[in-house]
Image 1: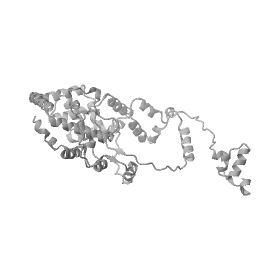
Image 2 (image 1 turned 180 degrees about the vertical axis):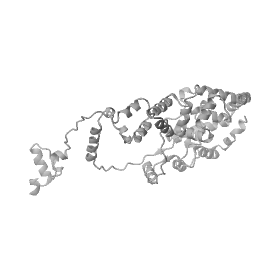
Image 3 (image 1 turned 90 degrees about the vertical axis):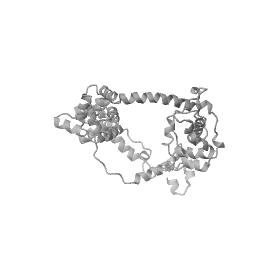
Image 4 (image 1 turned 60 degrees about the horizontal axis):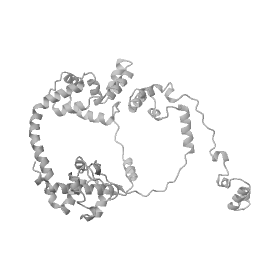
Length: 397
């Protein structure tokens, strides 16, 4: 550093360091700070504390996880006891003190890094169909008959419109940032949610429409009395009977909170509507079998008549589908369009698809969030094969 002060250039000083067997990069460090602090030569932190899972303050919550309770229920229990629920995200094999010390060190060491902006990638809309492997396609199937019927390049298609609808080069992170700036909705009272949150929400919607006490519902099922419930409502109630895992989780949660009758009732009151219904149904023996009997009784006459009429319709419909030339062409156009949207005309192409994919054509939206694949298909058919719009004439059944 004295050589620098007398006016020698940095290159000459570094050459002198290298000649003396020293690291020339030392000259790039801050001359006002020690070498040890700048090279991050800190002493290792030794973990002398008990593992988090064995810590007397937190061990019972890790035991609850072992018993099968969901993480959300365990964290709710910690919050109820006045503890930080985020502790469950730490490493259970290391002590609390050690992990806090390591977190503080990481904060000190963290440096701001300037990242070069990445070029936006071309994103494609996807039709999530179930493609059929070429080896599983029979020679007499519709997919063999329509193979090579349409080529995307030979179709009358506005290429710019297609690209704007089904490809996107904008940065998705920018959209997320705009969404994050919107004011958050007011928070509602948080329930325990021992079961899956989405399942609990769907079950709550069904139960809210019935307006029947859960204990009364349990008595009706136990006596196999459907009352004014129709088959749709019975099916929905049966769908939300507790599974074996849900029974274990609910039962365990109630037991852990049942130090007194008052605490037990408080824990039950914290349940969402679907969990309260499940708790009531856990007291009904053979609940699933009883629901099946009620449904069979309710639907027997209707299903018998429906079956007889349906068999005749099915036979006629099968013959019409096999003979329809327009249907074959339409399916070929759907296959061609789906492959173009999913792959851009290159890569692994589907040779066929299962029929449930037809229902997804209306669900799959373009990047404008207005135009569905079905709407674009109709437009394509009108321009190239307008006669296919009359496909229903060949299948009156």
